[in-house]
Length: 118
Image (cartoon, rainbow, N blue to C red; front, side, top):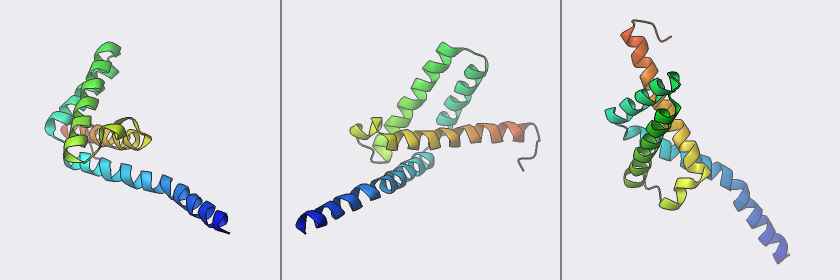
């Protein structure tokens, strides 16, 4: 009976982990977004321009700089530990953060061209 209770408790913990990891990545992404700067947007814009121009080496360098800055922000502003930087949770948060920055760049481009966003 004790073995069954322990097994049940362990399964409950492991079943809750994906949801907890998703919640954590959403929280980290939200924090990173709230602390994003105009410099972050400019870095994303530069990355997008280089990628569109097929300048792979320079785009890779720009991506590394953007990721480094995001990592510093996540650790100093959002409580992300060094060990979390290589986790799927942080990867998911970075994906959301990158999508946010890319959206800002595109929205500004459409606004500059007087194109409706809807």
